[in-house]
Image (cartoon, rainbow, N blue to C red; front, side, top):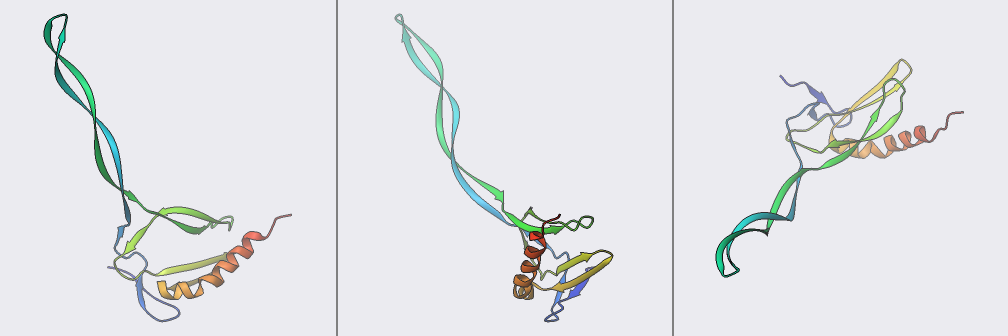
Length: 136
């Protein structure tokens, strides 16, 4: 049974772990494939079969997982880092949980994708401001 979350701004019903499928990029490239060919060769007046290797060009299409950047906060140090994760396409609306841990207190807000895009500039500004503070 799925756990539904309600967006704190618009009230839309969302899922923390909706069904997903991986986003892939199709890359086409050409490769050289070796093949053995027998040829009739005349050496010193004698005919004989000689094997040679010839290369043929083939076009291959590969599906490569697309990667996306994500911010993660270490719960022990509080440090925010960018990490690469496989990009996924949600089949149902996803709940985006924004957590801020300060000491033993935690602020958590839940957003749908559209509302997260509206508040993300403010969240990004806070992350940037916290990241720019230098330790003495």
